[in-house]
Length: 332
Image (cartoon, rainbow, N blue to C red):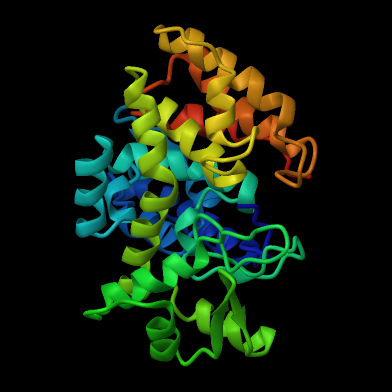
């Protein structure tokens, strides 16, 4: 489901302050030996300044004792709750590092941001006649262009995660104090735009909401993608991620340009690289049509995955530099 960009706060002030801190530490290091950078790296990471932490790699050199300050390695598993992490490992065969990298690749063309965990509480009506777009995979409440939305299932899963014995959309709405009802398969919200958006924004750090988000994501898009990969004998993180990205952007099943439709036109090769090369070529033909993406964002979206295939980064492990390289394009 298509999302759009949010306004971002400018991290310039914080970044400048951190640079000054490192400059001061550099001076101190000449007299006091190795500098501990963990607190500074954690500060940057905790505040979401991923660009800043990538830039902060100063080298303090001393002829007798060369020293280098580097940012801490990213803790991929910390992006998920232990429960979600185990669920994903069990049901997809992929670990936290692989799913973190998949989500970075998904979120670049959706929100122009690799820090995907900021968007659990995302909610906006982007005017695409699909109702409200919500969360890390763009669940929608439905409209003229989306008669079978996934948003209702998200709310039902939230009610389940909160302990309901008979989970329902209505139960979740009541829990959240949201006024709305299901009508012909579409979730119609009767609250004002600002009130509904604020309610969803407030769920950013709600553990039940995050669990419901991943369960719905799995049920609607991930499971089908994993099944289709395994059906062809493919188990790599890159292939599974490619299928998931296609499913949530263009639909899992049904239409000719859905994941199902594209797979039917991608041949029957048992060689994963051969098959995926054909798949990327077929997706590139349609990815900028039918409101899937604004050109040329769609082609760049597919190129992220195809470039990683060419680079041999199929397991998405130890791929930080590669991920940074393929996502270094401008969202239009």
